[in-house]
Length: 342
Image (cartoon, rainbow, N blue to C red; front, top):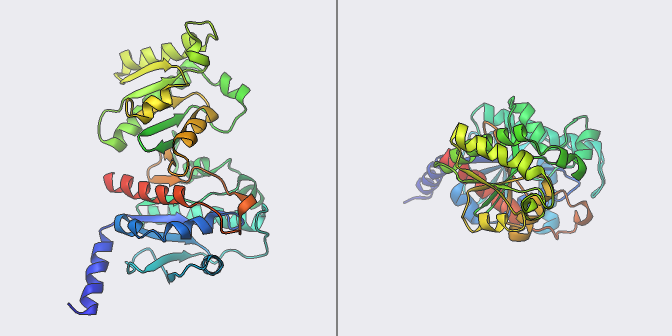
């Protein structure tokens, strides 16, 4: 086989793989670093065709700083690069100065534009999924984008009304009832109707991803799920009635409320397909203790597959070359797997 025939065969193989757009994230943080480190893993190229959406000049500088060799090629999201090449959809949009490790309008605006571009490419059927490096909520606000994070931004870009943040950590999948609100406000959000909607939604979305009827568990709010009302009333007043209605009226395979200090481990061991968490840290402490670095943030309800890392921009270590790319690798692989199954 001559060289050209071999390249053609490789390109034909690539053309059948899911195309995963990897947004570079905030340039003042660790986004570019973990993206490049993740893409050094050749096993990623066996399950997807990754296309970085970012600023090519900055990516090249980051690669030089990390002493990583990359053959960057400009992507139109329509071609199949060779396995030793890395496709970059270059926005060339880091216009102006910014300081590593500091929130800025320049990096924030650029990070938001990577996300907008990824959604546009998906809408044009040029990519199949998105894996996002971390952004700074403050920086994108400085850049003129008023969103609390990726989830709400992507929901608006895709016209999605019903969505939820979830985390996948191997066999543990957790869906959050509330996200970035105070603990006092989170407790007030534990209401029957809100839980009914989330249980139904989670069952539908997780079943769709797994291609089978999902088993859902609901964590209690209070210690030991209130132990029969000894430590709180929310389980009896709000959570149990929501579970009962979902089972009897909507046929959802859901049970609980379970003691929150054990239910996440039970989910991790495969007893349930997903656990409904009553508030942000109830979910994320469990996820990160069980599977930090391998867990992935998945936005449920979007019309496209979107995954992300389980951490933030890490401004404190940005520019040092010390960032761990494990979660970025896991996010890209899961995006590829879910899009191939969809």
